[in-house]
Image (cartoon, rainbow, N blue to C red; front, side, top):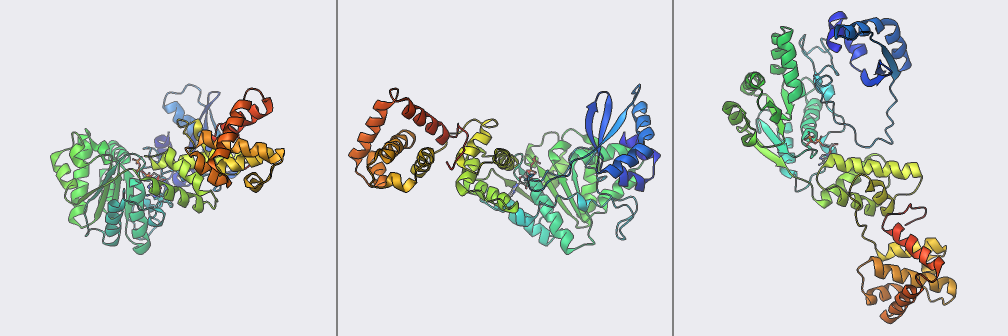
Length: 459
Ligand SMILES: Nc1ncnc2c1ncn2[C@@H]1O[C@H](COP(=O)(O)OP(=O)(O)OP(=O)(O)O)[C@@H](O)[C@H]1O
């Protein structure tokens, strides 16, 4: 549709109105397009409805219908990680951030995709750990001496480990220091698509102009070149043109060049000219640090133990890690409960295999105190009235059941000896099944401490 529209209106009009439009789906036979505000909605209805219907007709629709909806404003506070920049061919080929002919240094017919860089993906937001420190150091070196340090820089690693983030960071770094430099970020898919369009529309000169006149070329997911001969051929020439002019090239891939099947030998060897570096899955500490940074970034005070629980749950993909944090935040906020390990475990239980929450003695004490509505210190104190003795025995029993602590350790926690704990555990065990109130309390507290029950207090 966009192709049709673009041919029928001016470039400026196209970029002003159509670049921000998002397809929302089909409702009752009508294609629903998301627009930025009610003014745009009105404008589309008045000026572009017919054009859009014609576009659909040209694609074979019998009785095309198009309607417009205002896109909801993005609320920064609730949306934690920013989405990665659009990668689909229709939205990431540079059209979303065009400045054709508007900037002195950019030749006509050439896009400046600096704005396509995700603002979140900067060096300052990149947590360095043993898993990524080499890739990080290499990216920094390249950012400081583009075209000189390592060319090309080839970063590979599994999904969601920060390859795109590092590439964009170099882009931002360069854009800040050298505002006149041209930076192009493109996914291999978009590159391929642009090439296909250029061939079809007889615009190869513009295509070559665009890619061969940049100072920094960032190409994501280069493994998708596999099997695409024409794209490889064109990319080969782009690569050579840039390389010979000492322009920096950074490539990312999910595997090293030698493992990309059906990649032409001459391209493979070029990819190996510079530096090949990988990113591994982050260690536990790095995962916690990433979560902490994300929480702080959004001014959310999330206890360390909650971050640790999330970091234990998601071990390999950082995008998923950030998603898990977002789920926990949304869950706590929707249910209006404070962040706790139990809340986090509950929030994540639908997505990930339920995880054993490691229960600490202090957790049990707090939960029991909350349930019986007495201060924790009273439970650990020396009082002998029934109101504190029952909760104390319950707490000892639950600690014995849910933690790996020994009788003397539990005794130490309560300032008593191990025989007192043994007696308490026996007492509660005997009462279970006989005393319904105590049985229910034990079952409820157990579930809550293991994160299987809603958290209405301060577990
Ligand atoms: N070291 C890190 N510190 C902070 N955030 C990170 C780090 N690594 C990755 N992230 C975040 O994880 C998310 C996924 O990263 P990114 O998109 O760069 O992964 P990728 O390796 O390019 O994945 P794909 O293979 O899907 O393209 C992003 O939100 C990014 O900011």
